[in-house]
Length: 391
Image (cartoon, rainbow, N blue to C red):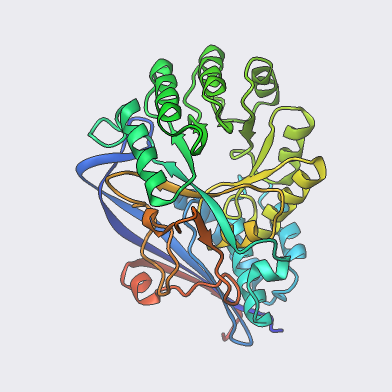
């Protein structure tokens, strides 16, 4: 069991065709446009030569990377087994931030633990399942012949069903709440009864009245959950508790509040029916599993935001959860935001779902994936290394 010798952070960029940002900075389908996406790969190496590696997919690089830079020197010389102590120190050190640079380092520490033990992270946590029921989670809508109408969303839900998915989530298309409600109705008419359906307006509903209007459309369509409806960004206990008085569809909140205590507060306030967790955003696997246990203690479910090997490992060890989120997918693009960084058969592409609508949990040591470092290094634009003197 070696102490931590070095931390390396590789910032890399890759181009994505037919993608751009709309006026709200949401990523949408834009034929002929090109977007350069920035990601970063994090490596923690122990004195014994064990490498913990992770490429985050959903944490915002421009914000998270600076927090990761600030925390990385604190790891040098520490025993990688002391994840709980490191979690506590990092949490205090980042108390004036949103904490999203913390999780990436914690995930690497868990990858080290699994590799040292010769076990998957899910096995270390305690396996509950190895195949994860998965929902197709759409990109935001567009005006360019992709997800540009209620019928287009319904067509894509049908395509997802034929591919093997048995659950489908709508991310919003427009500010027009009536068109959003029409999309909910169109998807339910097409695949309701065959698929579990969810709505995520991505905090687009600008008034309480609009949030109620769309929520009641979800009621009529028998949706499974209604997520982050309006533009307070999903942080008000009072607003969501009040919304629940008018809408029957269960609320899924707390994607935009960080850590176990604020999420517990949402449950205590009666402001959500499900909790959200994400190992990238919620202070790592250590933090995400704390949230899962709080949800279990309250007798409710926790649903994980986003896709990735860390997410799969967490979900594999949790009873009180329902789905893996395959995000963000589109009928003309697949899953374009995920860089091709795997040198193994791991995939979060739309077509990789099994015929029974599941994705597998990697069973190799640690995260269970092999990264394509040739690809990462070819696209690297900056490397920062933190190390003990002489290492």
